[in-house]
Image 1 (cartoon, rainbow, N blue to C red):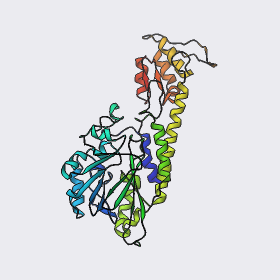
Image 2: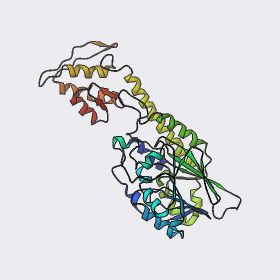
Image 3: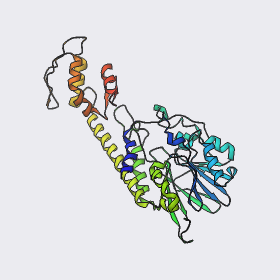
Length: 383
C-alpha cells in the first residue's frame, strides 16, 4: 500500500510539466509481458509493442527525445521498426505523444487517437486545456489518420484492441484492453490486459466553475466520475499503464527474471489503484463543492464573514495609518476589533483567512491581498 499512497501524492502537487523526471528518459531493457505484448518504454514512461503477423502496433510515443530509444528496444527484441503499422496512445500530453511526429515519419504508421484528444495531437498540444494556463508544453504536431470513439476496436493481423474513453486527465484519455496469452500457460487460457491511460490530476485542474474561475473544461467532473465507473467494470488480470509507477513496475522488474510475465498478474493492485484514484477525485470534488457553496452569492454585497473582513480591510487601508474596523454584525456573526495598521491586521487574520479561503476564488481584492493569497495557492482577482 505504501507505493499506492506515493503515486496518489501526485494529486496534491502542482504540475511538474516544466521538469522532466529522470526516470522518463532513462532507458530500460525491453521485455516480454505476454506472447505478443512487449514493454519498450523507459523506466517510467511506458510504451508497448503488440506484434501480429500483419505488422505491429505501438502504444505511446512518449517524449520528443524518446523515439530513438523506443526504436532501439523494438529492434533489440528482433522486430523491424518499419513493421510498425499503427500508433496508439493513452493520452495526448507531451510525455506520451511528443515523439509521435517522428515515429510516423520513420515508420509510415497510421495514427489513431480518441475523440477529445485528436485535435490536441494535431495542434501539438496547443489546444489542450492545460496548455492555455502553461501547465503543459507544446510538442511537434502529428496528423491523425483515424479518430476513435468509446468502444471502438483496432484490429491488425487477427489481434484486437478495444479503446475505452476514460476522460478527465485529458478530454480523450484512453484505456486499452486486449486478450493475451502468457508463456507457459495452457493454450486456451487467455488473460485480460488493461493499459490505463491516466487518472491523475494536479492543482492546475479545476472540476467546477467557481466565481470567475471556470472548470478546466465543461463536464470534466462528470468525465472523471464516468472514468472510474468504466475502470471498475473492466475485467483485469494484467495491470499496465501509461506510467510504470501506476502498476509498480520498479518493484516487479527484479522478480521478472525469476518468475517471468506472471509478475504482471495483479488484479488486486488494479482494483486498489482505481479505488485510490476515485477516492482522491471525490475528495477534490468535495473540496471544490464546499468552496462553491462558500462563494454562492459572493461579491462584496453579502459575502461570507472572511470575505467581509477583507472588504473592511480594503476600505480602511491607509499608508501607515491605524486600522481598527468597527465591530458590526455580518450575516449573524460579530466582526471583532483589530488594532494596528492594515498589515498587522492581515497578519492577525492570516491563518484563519488562508484556511477558510483555500480553494475559493476571492474577487474585488486589493493588490496586496492578491499577492498574499497567491503565495498560498488562492486565486484573488481585482474587480
